[in-house]
Length: 537
Image 1 (cartoon, rainbow, N blue to C red):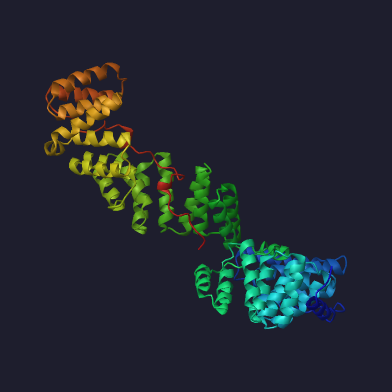
Image 2: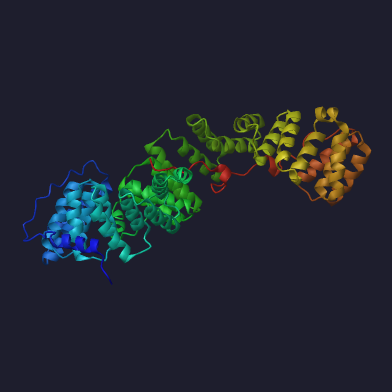
């Protein structure tokens, strides 16, 4: 393979990159770890002990120093990391890892001269490590050494001609040399390879502006972002994996939760607590994941721990209330919902679930107040509107119940339950009957003709009674009772039958013990019950 002139120039530079001789080690000023999380302290102390106990020759000692350096580096303690890397290099001059990572540490701090020195040394040991040439080229660009940058990116493109990061680096070199057409070609290729690398559009905008094409420059400027071209760097992936503080575990836990990997989420939250015990937010996050995994008893333990460390947490009280509902302790659940609402008045889930609970307790006026705090003019939550309508009717405001059922139907016009709810609410509301007596009978007949079900027949009987046709309502209701099984629904039908015989209309849409009036506790998986998962602080 033909080696280009700039690459030969760079290789010549590499030959002068000094190598550490001898084994004189530098003293490392180990930093004070007391301000770090307990888990991180333990992790770093383990690395120090490995240095003290390392034996078996220079290579093993070098590995101990290098691994210690990586730990410091992972936690951005660059000074002890760099000294430890230097000791690792002194003990094993032929190990590519240590000069490479030392170079990256210097690059992060903007020490271009030292970064160049150690990248050159590393690339002399492994000239095919693609990421090293890209990093070295970036150092040269940042240090305004375009000729050396071209050499580094040329070598990277020899290894991988379709590497978006190397193409971008070369394009930046051409922009610096005012060769805009060539830069545009390389940047357009990079965009095809990595469409999500939005930073490329910034460089394209710069190049197109210089060619005079202001329209394309404008289009790319509108698409610009901060996502840089990605390239694989196995050593940096290994380095980042060493960062094991609670924030890392929280981030990993949240990412696992969002992709649906609940066991991984739980494990990361547990590791976060090992690293930083007593964090209320992490205990709460773990409780939510455990609840979703069906481990309610364990979830309750985590909620109690969360409240122990943060007694005023609205989300923790909300979680405790939900778990208490699951055990059937509605009275205690209500107390914790009220604390959650007081702590976060804008949060809707506690109000929603407490409203459902109040319906089960037959405290319909309180349910109405809570539902109305959530409701607004554009509300498309038909289940909420349906329950609000039932609560309004049960608390004596049947006309508002009818209006609320009509609002729900604007969102789901074909819902059989909502249409039944509207007709039954209207037929059992004297004010609605007075306003439009024939409407409810017309709607009930249409529904019954469409589907001659037991529910539709009972609804028709209610509308007949409301329309003053008590005899017809009585006969229809009697035929229904013949085929109706026992229970609350039959008692409701019998009560209505007696009212029809007396020339009276029904007084409620469904029996009091209907499931419609007793919403079950909502599981966490129900999005309606879901507040935001506790996120990393």
